[in-house]
Image (cartoon, rainbow, N blue to C red; front, side, top):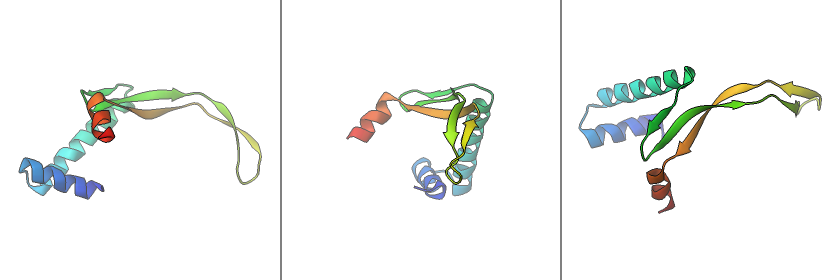
Length: 91
């Protein structure tokens, strides 16, 4: 499903105009991004939890040259599915 199709689904289920649904989705995604960027987490009960994880520095290999490189530590977004989402996917 694309973002546009997702917006159409929101509009159809809520009775909002397509533009209002798109604005609501954009607002929700912006809030999610801002929360994760500041190191917070977003928990949607039953659906899941978005959080930030630390990935440590590690050795790697450049696939073009075969040269060994050191991959820097970084922060990455993670998602842990909630019980309702897991149950829906299993069915």
